[in-house]
Image (cartoon, rainbow, N blue to C red; front, top):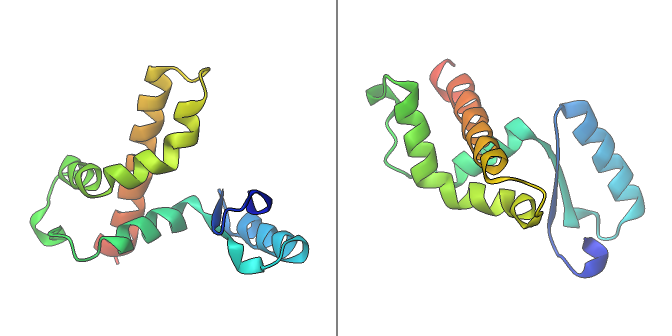
Length: 120
């Protein structure tokens, strides 16, 4: 993607070791190395949430997980849609699959939010 002219690429992995390994490999092969950012799915969720840190979310007032998920969809829905855009362009992906994937992303953002902010 960098070779096609994209100035910023995010490479998402499922664990920190894989992200660190990908960073080493990309930095060795691509110049400038800052064009690719490697992170875990949890790091991506945190980064998206942090981008909207000035929103009206008050975790002390929320007692239901669905309230948090509704706020995530309200505040980050556009970011999630952009993140999933390549999947939507694939005609093999059904509407139910895309809906399920969207809900999974919201779930993991909520999980990261609760684990990082509410429980600590």
